[in-house]
Amino acid sequence: MFLTVTQSLLEGFGSTLLLFALTLVFALPLGLLICFGSMSRLKVINYPIKLIVWVVRGTPLMLQLLVIYYGPGIILGNNIWGSGGTGRFTAALLAFVFNYACYFSEIYRGGIQSIPVGQYEAGKVLGLTGNQIFFRVILLQVIKRIIPPISNEVITLVKDTSLARVIAVYEIIWQGQSFIKSAGIIWPLFYTGAFYLIFSGLLTLLFGYIEKKLSYFR
Image (cartoon, rainbow, N blue to C red; front, side, top):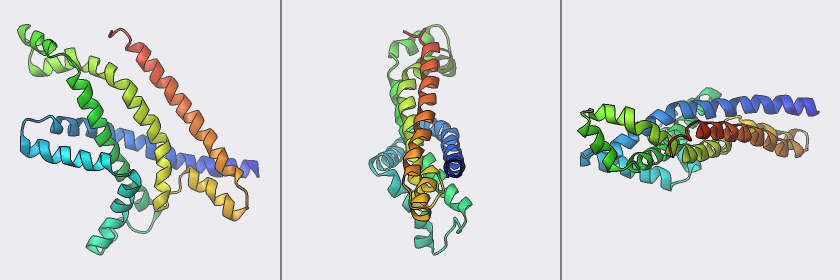
């Protein structure tokens, strides 16, 4: 039974890892674009983006999952995601990417705005262009400052992937819970915690290593 449970949980953890990895791949760069939009001097760009970020950060991710998956079918009368697992996974991925991109955008914004204005002015005095100042002077300092909050969000993402089960994405918690009905046992559900703990521990070590490498920025 233990081997059967382990195999089933590994399959579910594969979906969890895929959702986690794809969310980071798309949310990190999208968050930077949202950040630049929210910092824009054009009010027609600045205000709508800030409103969207406020709504996304102020509502539960579970609610966003339900709206994105069921909303098109109710509003348009056509379920654009289909009835298969691929459609449900795509809807979950979209919700996760947009949600975390908004959180990352605020982390980016805080990091960029934390750099003293004098460094920008010094770069201009040295004859550097705006792009050169950002990429050669500012960027590495920003990365150093945002690593701790980014690492917190990434570890939170590991646990938040379990919310995808609300639209029947077969991630690891779903697989663990399935044994309650099929075999009348609950320990596989607790067993899933080991997967989360190990993965979160590895991520913690990784981000600790990155912070140490960037420690020359004091």
